[in-house]
Length: 566
Image 1 (cartoon, rainbow, N blue to C red):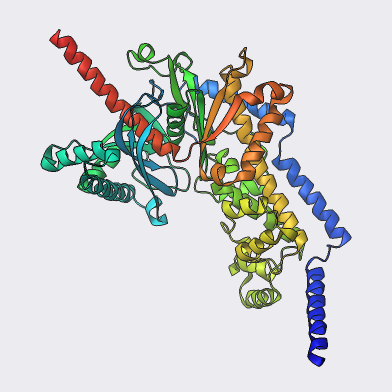
Image 2 (image 1 turned 135 degrees about the horizontal axis):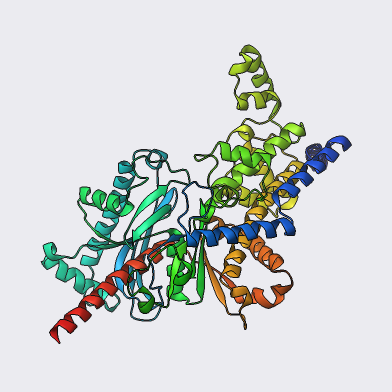
């Protein structure tokens, strides 16, 4: 009987303690601090989200800069869109065939791909993809080391694929073509044609041909010396030769061109390709006659449909009217390229988390106790700071001594993945956000109010990115006359990149922003705009364009031979 009576007592006591602890954690801020916090958050909202009037001014500047870039060569200063010709004058239509490899370097992760385009319209008969992470010492070290790493990875991928193909059984109908090819190659290895590679190189390149160009400048944290001003195709070809696996690099393109090409292979209504990932950029279909700074190769207009793909390099767009706060200036100042690619620093995944972290750091300084370090850590840091010369105490140590978590003061401690999880948190009491505040930023026993503030800040940063992306997309469509077409015609926008792919709330925000910015025309026009995720699109696009280039050359050679015979 005593045990039976004691158990409920113990259970009730434990519950009471849990409730008391929860109330302590969720204790409200003082009236003064809550009012100060509300003013602070209102200020950030006004700074980060542009009003309709201000957004219209930014859009007008965006369109003006597009047209200026189409008409004349642009100074490479990282503060204006370059509107680069891509030398793609025969846009994919789904009839391309052939097989090749692709190397897709678009950020700190890169992909290698094998693809075989089948005879059916938009048919992929075979596809194999591998993703590899670049070590920091590779993407910030010497340029030859970067290309040697890429070549070594591609060589291993090709070797594995060809070894696998050579063991396929001819009786297997699904791989009979591959098996016959492998068997024939095995009997005459020296005569095997070089593997064809499409190179998706997602940085600002001024192209001099479909498979040649020069790098204008690094972005996305890359800073390899010895590459800017040189031809990435030549560097890759040389590295492949050093690796013992020479290849024919048949196409050089940007990731956005790849996304556009890949989706056009599947859907001829595709007019725009957009990357929202580590970095950001866009490519769109433009009339050859509008790209007056570039002379198309002879026969381009006659052989195609009179249109080409333009690589915008929109990450370099800048306008004084862009919605920015003091923390954005800090993010820019601490970036690898201060004062450049400022639009990218407001949109891309590389900077979203850092902007939110810096804002939360400011909030922590303005509202003591909201985002606090543990008492033990604060006491230890204060004692250490007292023993040190004040000038020698770093920002992190000074923050902890002031009661702010050291990780909250540490650049890069909040990534875009954590930011998206906070924005999308629907757990009771924002439990997920609290856990992330503790694990990522070192906040001690974060309260519900702290979680609410973190979610509001992260949402503002993400919403601004979506708002500006929507503005840029609509600027493209208004520039090319889509918005005034009668009757309206369908247009597909192809997206790739981790932010768009993995951040569901971001996709919702982007759709909402497009509708809002269309204004009164939204009901009529929004249904004609289709957003499509083109996963691995940049790599597939590289393969499509490389296969198309080889097929086109073979067709031209056959036609010339037939003409000579006649």
